[in-house]
Image (cartoon, rainbow, N blue to C red):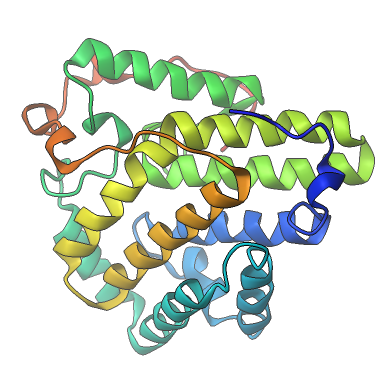
Length: 262
């Protein structure tokens, strides 16, 4: 994986405005993959969402016309406006259940980890990314660090931090955030989320969560293309079925870090 010596080499993709727009998209997706409540999904009903969609498509115009992304974003917004949150809550419970789903687990380490020790190693690696930026998983949501919502929230943070660094600290600090994004996509999100979105969308069949899966898959594809990230993606045969039921909490717990929460 290579990194440009200057963010100015791609000033359109890495302008402060575009960084913030892409950061917001990660935050929107993060909010959609946890138990649905109005405050986490309110942006989908915002009058500014139409402008946001247009700005998001602009972020990728150097390589893609963004038609597929916009199509599914339009569908996602339409389905959210048509369905009360109470209905989405029932749909979410049906999809996710009360234990880790065997069909479409929302946790990275249920993909490709051969045993509980490998899972623990992967969890420690993920938590290491968070620790490097002074972050910890939320005590409010109480999700494991490899939950898709938490990982997407971390990317939101990195992009926002990159934009802030460009405005206040210069390219050197911004490049640290960019390098972290590339590495986290290559070693984590880019490996398992494409498969997850296929499985999640298949189980949803149609409706809001099917559209959410399509939006997420397309957005991650565009992100990896924009950042020049290539990685070996998991296949369906890599889903660790025998471990999906979950290991004991004491085996899968992460080290605790004290600072800002993801």
